[in-house]
Image (tube, rainbow, N blue to C red; front, top):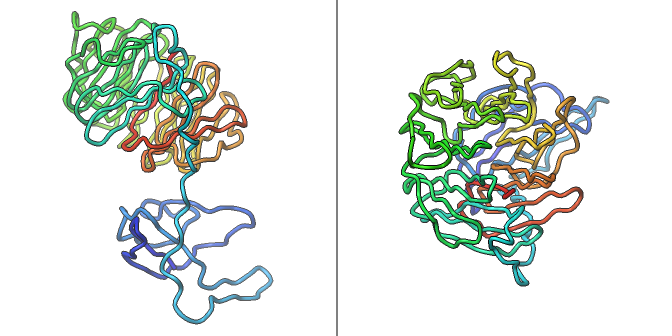
Length: 378
């Protein structure tokens, strides 16, 4: 029996479905019945926007031939929703946010009516500073090598905040839904209105690329090239530094919007719809790796080339040469950021929660309603 429920537990609908195939012992079967069969029930979900979907066993036949049936009478309509992790107590005095104290700070972009950024010192659950940077909403965060924070918004351009500052020092004029910085300090920002590059983060010399970007769909490589996930076609366009004409294009699945480079300048793209991440050789665009299985929400690379995949169950590390490592289990990881010395931050956008994974230790930060982006200062 499958039920769809709203946040308060009110039932939208209920249906009885038949499992296709067998449940293997100790295997959790997952899949999206609206797009694929895989190891999931064969059914039509009428309410794809339901925040809670509960599946209960009605009857079963076991390997030895015995059968089981649910007790007579109606099954309860509500299955209690799993509670998000309890945030660490927001107590104590937060370290300062200053020119002298900003290294490895975590920036969290959030807010539904305003674009806000909270800055957390390493290990702290109390923000050292909370900044208002404009009207709705934060679309991306990135630090440059000097610790200046760039905050892309959907309506108020890109705010540039210096270490220790409580207000933007200046703004870049382009609003959008995607932001990227490279090692030279060049800034790329864009969305449906186009993609613009600001050399060294300055208004002077700004130039436009002839593409429109998927939300979050731009990234700089270590070698300086810029990749854009095209909103108008199933492709990624790659631009050499300073060029407005693509040096190559890479064909991808429709709807591909997650994009990043590993330390070796391999382009990697992710698709939430197809639940895949694909990595390509530098320059040639030849596919080298395709990852299937994790329920992909986001991904990022650490400095060793290990991939950190944000999933509905937490963060799945994936070795640069090899396969999956032990899951960092937690809430949904809709956004992921990696600190240069290893710790990983994962943000659950629905519950406004950030979990910091540092080895076996977990720190939980709550109260970030409308969470949209994370970034670590160098």
